[in-house]
Length: 521
Image (cartoon, rainbow, N blue to C red; front, top):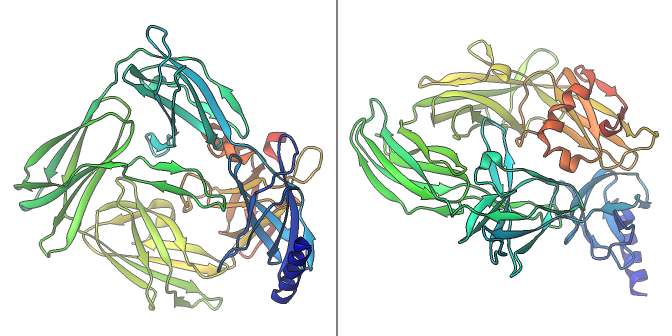
């Protein structure tokens, strides 16, 4: 009776708000059994996102707006899955069955050099990203071995992991080696439980040093510096059941150290470290005008001693930005509120230009060097960056030069961004739901981060996809179903461009291109 009253109330709400009452069922992807207690979230652009819980039969009912909508399904030990559905204009609509896969599990045993089980050994999984010329690390929650040396790492999302073992008996990378370069990454897919080889801790705990030479740069005055040294390896947390992600930087940080440097003086500072990952040295001081400025440098520690030079140079770079929207009659009008992010090719000093009411922005105290246009936020609807020019150079492809002399970057947006839409099917001609479709441009374009293409979309229950906001260009279009792990597989992802279908998008063009899933080819 209570369920009937609740259903009636939802139906009345849906009718009065113009929303659709969406129903569905969530099951275990392996057993097919209904999953109770799954949190279902209907994402909306603004306001609170409606949520619902599946009942003991795995059923849910939730209100959603018509059109392409993203639903997030989350349950403990099953992880989180975001799925697109095409919701028609109707009073009620039932979506296809949603399948959730259990998290992956790694198990194994740890022994000392005398073949005795090692109790309370710390087992820590790391994800290693080899982009940008060197490894970057993400540290996930670990566990400890029991009195039999057994360990069980559960709740792991699909990825490639490096395991580190540490105890008073010794340390090792899996499968029992002392050097990071010889470690075997473990590839884990959804719902898999992998029994690992026994690990022997034969090497004593190893510590290393990171030596930072703090150097007062050329033509710099004497300065009083506040110096800090920090571990910047992100502590990754499991995704929230509503799809939110959480991680924390700076797991450990040294106390502030006051350092006085004479012109061109160098001061060596040594830090003893034991945990692999990223580390950052930062120096902060006041420039002649009293403004606080800083310089920092990052490195990665994998067991070998590291030496780096942190040169202190007061930032002298200046940059002017102008954002314009081109009209059809050839005129241009200023655009306000557009945020352009700039990433340096060397270092981590990210900068940005945010256009004011007249479309301009002035940025000072930048570190000099070459920057790339990384992303455009809050650009006019249905527009794309048609050009970005600095001193006659195309900075969309060549990058931006930042120097002590203010130099104007003029960015023109133009309405008429292209669209690619189609249907993704398997070799049997069946629609593939929840797959990822990417469009990789053949020209340099801003990336949102993480090495993934800027242009992507997930298929709905009919296999349909629609990728919008495209610049006129030729793209390689590809789609695949098991994309959760594929995005973490660098070898697979690099081959997407070779296997994709070439598609040319014109201004205001709408290209219809159906695809077959890559893993089926």
